[in-house]
Image (tube, rainbow, N blue to C red; front, side):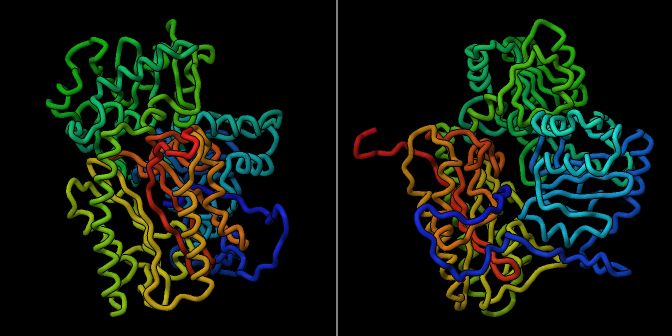
Length: 583
């Protein structure tokens, strides 16, 4: 599934330039579909009226003596997919895309998001909201500086800011006479009130050993050896991302959509294991599995989820050093640890170890993809027979594909909301149909389906683009060049520990040659019944270097705004190459 924004820039050529007559890439600019200058405003039927919601939030902003309030798109674990309970930015703005930040002042409201979601945001937001076509924290902070007066106070929930995000804002605000104010009471929650969906609490269960690469005790021992060999000798490791704890203990649940996780933190020390979680969700068998009835170095001590901040602060008062991964640790925990007691890295050792699959994990992930391919092939064959009859729409197609997957062994639901997009809808990289809003599939249009499944042995993600009629010459060339990019990157031989961002150009070269491009990342890691977008593997600047044993998607594309979209995606395994020079 396509990720992240790839910025627009002028075309450059190394040797000589040739004139090209292709349409401009679809993501290079467009007008807002909303018309807010008329009275009443002309809005899409999908726009959400947020007037009362904003009034309730602004009352809270005034109560706290603030000039502005920042609302990120995540939860307290920096999760990509979040529960209804945590969809604060979606509730306040109406915009439901997975990426975007909202800011509300006493007089204005604005959302920042990347090119995948521009049209979706325009269709969902009313005229209370400005749309800014950037997604970085610096752009948000710069706008705030122009909108609030000197001496203004900008509120934020520290549990919704990663350390990296907080530092970006803090750096931009320096010497501005505007002040960031950490407030652990979330103001959107207070405005939302009793209408806010409750927290789900399904059982937490242990995966059968047949579906795990190592036991949790083996993983704990490996992580402790990383701690002991670290030059700064950390005494504790704090894990905040939900997939870190799920992977470490081979535990799963279903607190958030599409990901088999449960709300939790882990504090692993040289002599203890502390798991912060809702204790009532464990069966007696799972409690026994975790050795919760003892206090030794391989016994898991359960503590209440809500106590993690106080417990970390208490642990940090001793003679300790705490290792954190900056990308997933929130400022809400970071701010209670003295800076001299921190050991910092971009990602925790759990993230980096988890990214490299052992031989059993590789076999499990491959097996899940084989079964998943059966479901996708069944769907494509069914489409070929039924689309010409005019009876298939985007939504019913997506539902049928989910049904095909559910019949495969070890299925545990989809790994993300299926992108089933016909014609101009496929130009939106992350469009998904609904029961109320969808298009019919037609033999005269291209159709893009990006989907995936969760299985006990692996997570899958695959995209195919098809046409059952006669595509135009431009569509044929664009498709061919996307395919060329997929082949070029899939066949690439490179030195071990090469950064993915260096390889990214191989997937784009064929498109670049004729002045085309795409506005999302080229690929991402994938987990063993974990995240469909498993960081830190991928082809972006903040991904770690590639080594054998990593799985990554390869998914170049092209999107012609208002007409069609093309994306081809497969998951590839990094293996050791046999080269001529035997290097």
